[in-house]
Image (tube, rainbow, N blue to C red; front, side, top):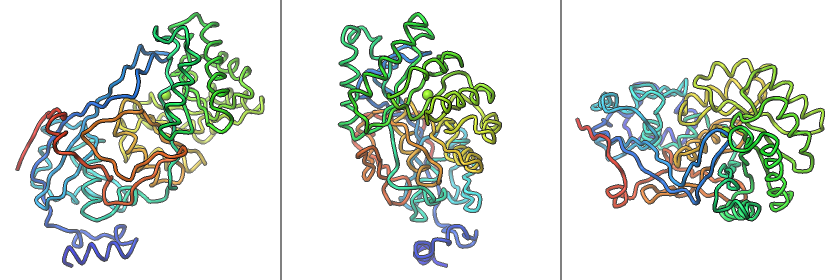
Length: 399
Ligand SMILES: [Mg+2]
């Protein structure tokens, strides 16, 4: 079959990609050049401390790969592969790595397969979320993950209540209706009792300011222990917290006890955890007993394939995933592609970053939901002038 005819057939029949035979794949595309680079994005404000780490600042840097082909079609995406690994792609058919049956992208890039997915989507004229499964809802619920310890920044210390109100207004302005509040001040920065009390006050100020229609979650970065977590949620009543993330280092037993405490109090707060795991397997034992209800393996650490695996496991037991994503502009878009691929996505974490290098047309945050464009690939583009000025080239290899 001629490539053009094939692409037409694939577009007409949704099952075509799944049953793609090796001989039907377009074979005229070859990878001719691979560029590894970084882009630093600017946050809309200084993010302060969290329970464990000092001030997070107002910038974050993503690592990218740009894959060129002889067809003029390019792939773009998150990837930390080094020059030697990337060079192995030169001369290859980009679809050689794509296994439609298992929804896996193999090859030399490790977990950083996004640029190959983007390229495959463009060559097959499919959105990446469709190649990844296409079972998710649209638009995608999102949240603003940037409510750090503003009260502990000296510039806001004497007016911290107002600063939190301002930060919530900034998020609302950006289209958010859900917010994650960092807690755990008593772990490193304040005496334990004072820190725990301040955490509660901050949640109250934000709930009072935002009203009953916004969704609030909390994230302690493991800055509490089980007893402290139970005490905090004994105080919480009308503050209405939708999810509690990393209250303490997760064990099946402690998470179950915490969850029971929440239910005994009549709270529907979901237990969320898993971002510090460096492997997925340790999350398995939490699933059957439902000790964690929202699974949060890191978006970029595990990539598309890893999060799909976690989501498939969680789905077996009726649980959801909400990948961890902080300090990345691109990780937000990766989550949105995953969200449209799977049926059990909870909510995407947004770190309010921006840059001039990339375009993201069709992705829009409105009333707490993000749209995802129905275009081939991931839907991110490059402004060449800004790329030449702002991208820091790590390597540039050519066939
Ligand atoms: Mg977290």
